[in-house]
Length: 331
Length: 215
Image (tube, rainbow over all chains, first blue to last red; front, side, top):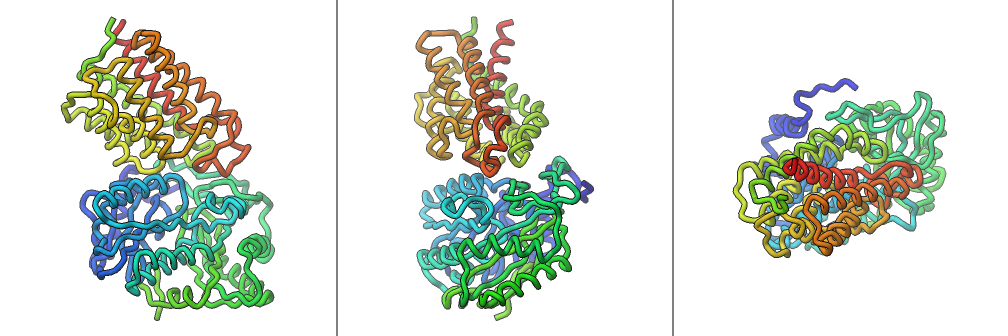
């Protein structure tokens, strides 16, 4: 796979340097670790997110006003180190504690937990909410084993808004958990992304094949089939998604159609059109829709559909204004 | 027979081990790509390169101190699950063990033995979960047996290497309980775990170095 890089060992460092050249007026890069924090910080619970690189704009794109306060950036597809997590948390803690929000992956959990231990030793109170929205990654009765994918976007948004309201760490964590518990995603993969260090694809799929439920690192999904029309494909995904919560008539939801890297907005809108039709037919009200490539895997082809069920409380935080160079919500 | 390595020799042995991870990077990447996300070889080579730098720069009075610094360097540079787990393999036992001013069979048994428990506590993996524990646990049991029988350091490492290798081979028969291979279910059968392979490489490399000074 062709890529525009220099030394493959330096891709994360050089990416962050370029990010700071572009947006450095609003952000600060921590000196010794790959951590980025918001310059303009308030006295409130701090929200710290993070994970492996290679999924841009996830995760740094969700540090901003009304969003997260800091991000711990790992190497490509690898969790950030405990020291990075700790330094970011220390930098953004205003004395009200830190909420860690990240996807449920073994490496992230090990490193963030160790980072949280370092914070506790320093007297910084912390809480953690693990995002586990991918319904294809484990059955419903093993939801603790599910991975976090594009649902991160909704959960980060709610966490940031709740923290911005000046609530306590316990309250911010409770509301963030509620957002997490009401969020479900499913993906479909068409073509692999590739690892910058090796240039190798993360998985192989025949030219005429797709795989439902494949993870963002090429983790095997639930079903491999021939490529199908957009509506048929959307119907398969929505069936899996709707039965999982389950979403029911009268529910109100936010929709995210997330591109995985190389899938076009044209394709994503075609899918969103069908998603809207299905929800309308079922009497599920769409409060808001977002069609964007937030959580990618390099040039991977495919997309995911995320639904978050709202109640009045979640709606208030979802509707609160937020801004980063990659995510805008007008109040 | 040299049955104890002084701190200079311990450092040289570790640098040899670290070098083996640069050499084995493609091999580990290939193994991990089959059922994992393919970054294990890269992570291990980064971690050992950083640990090697620290070991070269600093002076150590005890093996415990050296292992502690090695572990910290690995955790601080690797990221991913393997950073914490392999960092803990070096530093987990160093804290509570008696200080060892030389590397002998007793030191390696106690230091890695203490780490095994720390790894199991942190990672929650048991034997048969298709992780590095499948190689480390039998290697530790073998070291403990060799220590009881007052074997030489070289013989102890030889048998630990064989036990680690047998454990590594057995991971082919297991379904993964952790990491990205977990979602493969039975499709992971027939493939060995990359972490278990790294444990084997660590023991094999230590044995090779100690064997080298005997020749």
